[in-house]
Image (tube, rainbow, N blue to C red; front, side, top):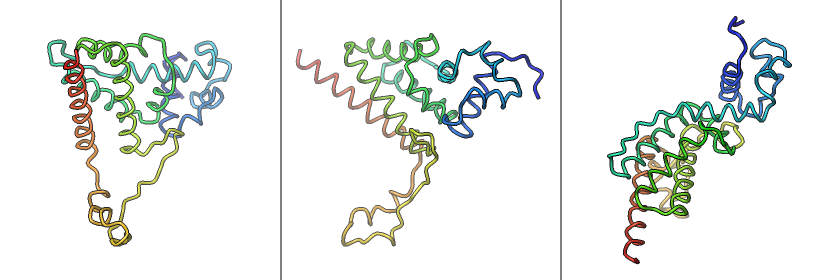
Length: 215
């Protein structure tokens, strides 16, 4: 048993560890107290309840994002850096990241990544409405990539990876699926992520150019 004094940081760290092992459904104040070897009532001196604890988990994960933003870089490069930084922390804490995107946070830790992303898009000339839509699109893309890559569903239950076997598909009924079965069954996650990120940014650049042309 650790002799380190009980603190909010220790409680949140124990919750993150439990979520990554068993999923968010395993979280309760009683379970965290058992993990730390303390009385459940002692937790309330540092965390008012489960909801505050889950907010603490989300804020802790977000605060660990390592942004290497370069204000002098082109906005497309800045967007890439920010997306990769979020993906990196999501890959490290996949189940906790699903909790992050499901909660509305108002702390500095929760708002800083949002502020950075919106500031980058606004500096590129996008209006507020477009910047918000684009931010949501990138988050949806990163989370969708995470689900595929690490096999975590929104209900925090692991899923089994299923690949398409060429000999299990009738080529007469599904000629394209049959001919592309090997490609459908293989996935380089890094390459797939970068490919999708390039498509998104290319689409945004085309959208910006189209709007500029209508003015």
